[in-house]
Image (cartoon, rainbow, N blue to C red; front, side):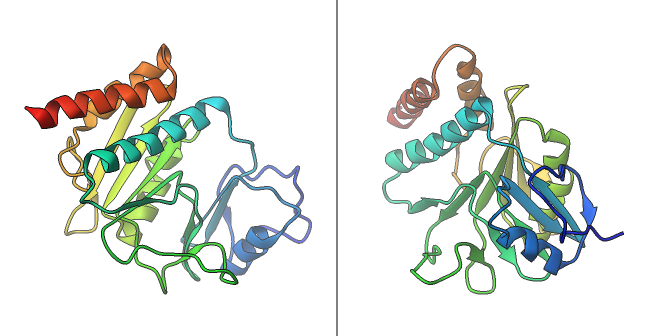
Length: 224
C-alpha cells in the first residue's frame, strides 16, 4: 500500500520504509509544515527521520567535517568542497540527504539565487564521497543506504558507527558494488584506522581537540 501523505502530520512516525511514488516524496519534501531531518527515496520506497539531531550525532558529524578541513589544509593543491546534509536528487528514481557530502576537483556544484536548494544530478555531477553518521540507523546505513549510493555510482561511502566508534569505508568497484577499504581513495592515502583513532578520542575530548590531534598525526607523517 502506498503511504497516504494527504493526512500526514508532524506527529506521524515515518522512521521506517513505506511504499511510495516520487510524487509522494515531492509532497513530503515540499511540505513546509513538516520538519524532517533526513529523507530518502529509493526503488519506490520512502523513508524519513522526523526526529531532531542529538548531541552525539552532531558532535561526530562536525568532527568528520573538521577532518575534511584538516585534509584540505594539509593538501592546499587539492580542491575540496563539503556539502553535508544537502539534498541530492536523481528525479523520479532516487533522493537522499547524506550527513557527509564531499566533492573533489573540478565541476563542483554551485547554488545560485532562484534555483532549487538541492543538488540535481541532471545538472550536477556526483559527489566523490558521501557518508552517514549512524547514531540510531546503523543497519539502514549499511544496507539500503549503501545500495542507494552504489546505484548512484558514488565512488566512496563512509558509515560512522557512533556507539562502536568505528568507521566502515567502502569504495565502488567496476561491478558497481561497494567493497571495504583500509585507506581512502578519495582522500588519497588517509588510513581509515587513523580516522577511527580520532573518533575514539571523543570519549574523553572535544571534537575540536580530536581534529587537532589528527592534524598533528598527519603533519608528522608528511614530514617524515
